[in-house]
Length: 112
Length: 117
Image (cartoon, rainbow over all chains, first blue to last red; front, side):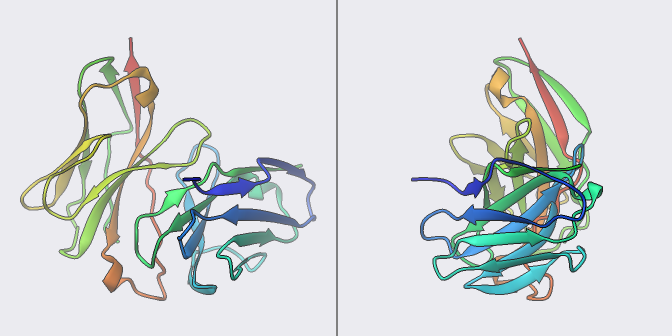
């Protein structure tokens, strides 16, 4: 079975721009979570969606938003990019609310 | 969620067992212990989890002390491909997740395991 997939693999943006990252969960998984991992640190929770509804939000500014589609795929949007938004963005899916989360390979975002 | 403490780094000889400790002295009765690992620049990989009984799967064994205040992840025969950062995470059981808090995983610094030839 295919794992969690994310696109694009790498992305380079400039300050002030907007970016959309995409995630497809494992087939049959209804929940998607997003994490940000800055170089040298552990992943930090951004959002969790379950059955297309936001079920949790981490300590991130309103520039960060996300949504989940009827097919359970998800998008993470970041507006007005800052240099500090440069990070590996990770998507994780779980079969149901509270189940084990399985991570994708991540999207490496570089903001210049 | 309870906080975990792990040594920042460990070395292990190839072919030997790697024993990675984790302290979680404030763990609650409804919290699971999860282990993930992250090989350089890849997404974290789920390894194993448990509540109070010892667990074993094809990747590793998880030993949880009787008082549940600490645990050890055991890789029985470490290989060079096991070199990674290993994260120990404590997370509340699914049915008791606070909707406002979400179902997040809280990652600490982890243990950087270096398997040497």
